[in-house]
Length: 434
Ligand SMILES: [Zn+2]
Image 1: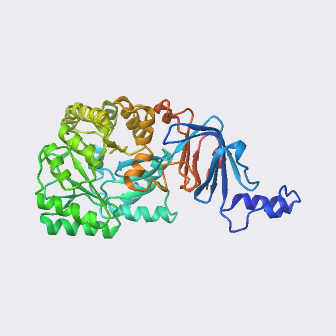
Image 2: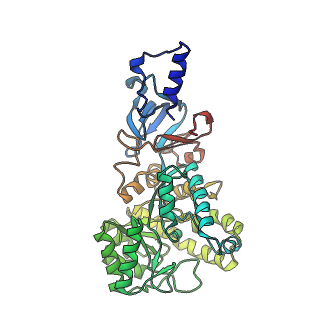
């Protein structure tokens, strides 16, 4: 609803029109919103504009600058952002809205029907957005439910972040995933079917996982012809490939064929990290899943003892790999493999993940970039999201202190706007869209 216009018309009917008719928006003009009085963080330099105005028309930012230099149109809906720091909406590149893990909670979901699952996924998408995550990449969902949810969000039938999805996880028979395909022909078909359904990434598993009860996390079960073919098919369709991987041998093999991204990187050696740096290959660490902050989560979901032990032993290697990757300047984009809003160490998994990047060697600004503009670059959407600049979608969150000086400022996140619509504003709930 065009609220400012309706209010102006209402005031005019009472003879209270404060603005000349010519200055009022046309009935079909997009809603203008002005975020006024906050500090806007320049995500590239870390500098900020104090006492700023961000002018938003419809879904997009039209102007950003000091309030002294920008006139707020009288028709604009003004939202005060005093004492807040505005940063681009957070991005989480390893998310499963339909996540099921081993343990009591996972067992309960074993017989979940598609209708139940997509409703659960929609609820998780909503909570993700309210946690400040305005863009996600889904890295394995079931039976096309992710594409349905994405369409529903696009039509306004569900609330959630922008979604890029890899569809179903494609694996060789017995691998770490559900969609099994063997040999170049089957793997090509599997990839093409996911792309046809809407996948903008292809995800493969080139080694086992922490939660597997069979297969070896350090093995490389795919043949060269299988791996090279599926990567080539994806690339010929303009789609990038990411690999679930815990194995250096499998990593070197995939790098030979131009894989774009690795998930987790639990056990990657120096040779792999050097090659990733050389090729610009991305690492999405999901470090929260193997560090102590996640133990409360595993206990909550009733994970078996063997799983907790495996997490603890993997965690040490995982941490060392992350530290080394950061030191070597490997491309890192934030991802959690937990729900983005999942409680972790007194905050959300997304914020905890960014904090751990700082602890592992990134500057505060680098950690903030890994949670915003770096994922946008990895997705190839950084021209339209990831910065608070004119021409970009108005995906903006606000926190109570400068996160470029201390990444933990993200813990105070209390305002979420996506595409110019306010979904959360704890200090002024009346500004939230309904
Ligand atoms: Zn995952």
